[in-house]
Length: 99
Image 1 (tube, one colour):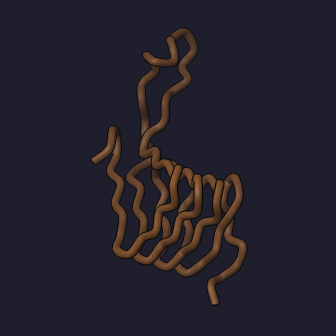
Image 2 (cartoon, rainbow, N blue to C red):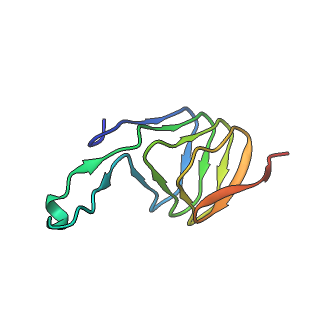
C-alpha cells in the first residue's frame, strides 16, 4: 500500500528503469505552504498482467492499465488504458492495438 492509495502490479509485468507511480497528488490550496497542502487521490493504480512500461513512464492515481498493454518510454499515464494496446505520449494515448 502506498500513501493514500494502493498499487497493484500483475504477473509478468516489465517495468523499465526510472518509472514512477503516484497514487496521490498534492493539493494547491491558496494560503498554504506546498508541504502543508493536503494530499488527495483519484483512486488506486492497477497494472494488469503482461504489461510493459518503457523507460521513465509515470503512472498517476486512479489509472488502470489493461492486460497486455505496452506504454512507450517517457509517457505520462493520466487515464486508464484498455487491454492489448500500445500507448505513448504525455498524456499517454492509444496509438494502435497490438497485433
